[in-house]
Image (cartoon, rainbow, N blue to C red; front, side, top):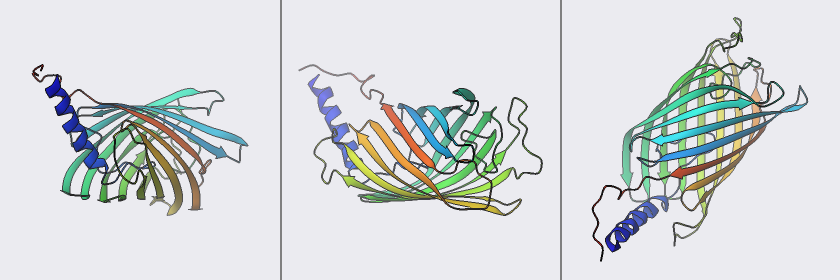
Length: 281
C-alpha cells in the first residue's frame, strides 16, 4: 500500500511539473496536444447566441464523450441539440478525432503538431451561409493544428477544410449556396493563477484571445470573429470555460454570429496501478 502511494505521488509530481510550465487548453479550438492517454472525459458545451433578426436567443447544446486512446490519438463523440424548433430537439451527432504526429518537448516549452477530422450528421434547417459541421451542417472537415507552449504562454494556429452536404429530414443544402469553406483560428492563452504551484488541488486561471475566420472560395465571402475567454481548471480534473464571440467583419449571411459560450468538462483518469502488483508494508 505504501509503495502504491509513493508511485501515485511520483506520478502526480510529474503531472504537476507538466502543467506548471503553462496551459494549452483553448476554448474555441483544440490544441495540438491531447487529453491524457487511457482516460475518458465528459464535456457539455452551451452556445447562447443572439439571433437579433428573429428577436430570440439561439441556443445549442453539445454533449461530448471523450476518449484518450493513447498519447497521440483522441476521439470525441458529439451530440447536437438546439431550440430551432421552439423547444430543445436532438438534431444530430458527430465524431471528431485528432492525431498528434510531431512533438519537440523541452523544459518549460514545447512545440507540437496534429492532424484532425470530423464527420457529422444533422437534420436541422439550413438557415445561414456560414458552414459549421459542429452543430449545424451535415458534412466533414479535415485540417492541421500547431501549438507552441512557452512557459505560461501558449500560441496556436489551426487551419482546416470544411464541406457541407444535405441535411437529413428533407433539409437539402441550397444549390446556389457555397458548400465548401476554408477556416482558420489563431489562439493565444496565458496562465494567470496560480503564480506558484504547491498542490494539484489549486485552481488554475487562464485568459485567452482567439481570432476565428472562414472563407468561402466559391463566392469569395469572408467572416472574421474575435473571442476573448477565461478558463478555470479545478483540482487538475474539472474545467470551466466562459467566452464571448463577437463578429468583427462579415459579408456572408449569418443569423446569430455573436454570443456566449459556457462549457463544463470533467476528466475520468484510469488507474495506472490497476494491473500492478503492490506490497503492503
